[in-house]
Amino acid sequence: MGHVGHFGKIEFYVRTKKGKPKVQSFDDMKWDTSINVEEHKRQGKKPLLEVTGKNSDEISMNIYFMARYGVSPWKQLLLLRKYNLESRVYPLGIGRRRVGSYKWIITKISNDLKAFYKNGKVTEVMAGITLKEYPYKKGNSKKKKVIKSKKKKKPSGKDGAASSSPKSKKKKKGYTRYVVKKGDTLWGLAKKYYGNGAKYPKIFNANKKKAKGFHVISSANKLQPGWAIKIPD
Image (cartoon, rainbow, N blue to C red; front, top):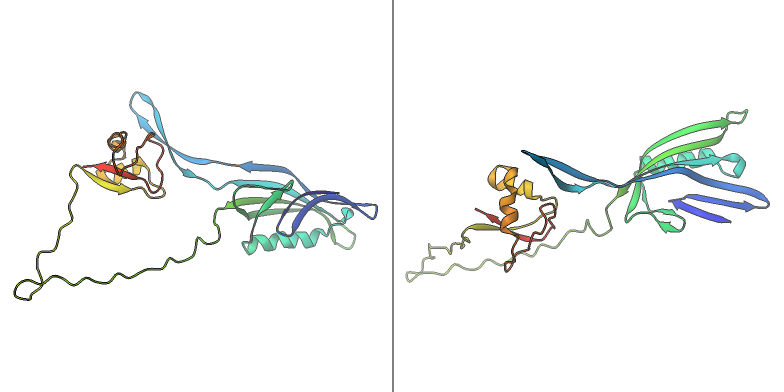
């Protein structure tokens, strides 16, 4: 008896029942992982590579449903189609090990109906499926409670009228304090603040040394959400 893996109610196995073989398995599994990289051309030098993000992993495989091995091809074909059309999301297990860090969703199915009985009932199906990583976990969609702050009363002057001189925020000289958000790049920040992405070294150089309350940027291609950095004027 051998349990190969599973996806939802679709199980992959090779075993014997009452002396007869029962097989439902797959082959030609391909697992693709990639990132997004942009090239910034430089005069007289090789282009500068900037990592702008990650792509969802993708898996493709061929699954075999054969009546002679105790499987109902049509039933399994309809189940796969249901998973696809209803956007069902499940973990993928191979060899008693979970594949990837997230669950997977079927983005495409190509069913090859290979053999039929005389009455037209399908006896053999090869289903080519494409799965994509679904990087969402439970709890991410919960709404955060918004606490309303009480309005403070404005101090009144000698005549009882409200003071007309509100406290102005002190602006730090020479730079703006910026907290990095998801998806930010030095190129994108330079384009936002200076109107030219090629001026990103100005931001990089301003954050190479340690400064209280700010994060050191050691690589121009690496920014993490939550970092506080300086944007020079």
